[in-house]
Length: 86
Image: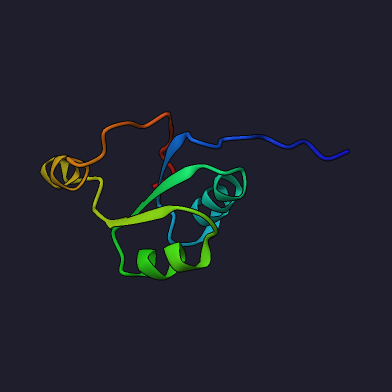
């Protein structure tokens, strides 16, 4: 039996999403219809965003730098789900 989740219209932010578990989690949310924001401190985040279906916003950001996080996420008005994978 397959379980399907619907995240259509939900804003989901996944850190550490350029590869591995973070990418897999982001892919699951993307396939479930989420408006996805993915973060990583590497340039690989841009390529990861291109491989994901749906609306994906890639942000290069070091989450250990509070000032950078504040700056980079200033335009994000809503987050319904946060996956802090980094």
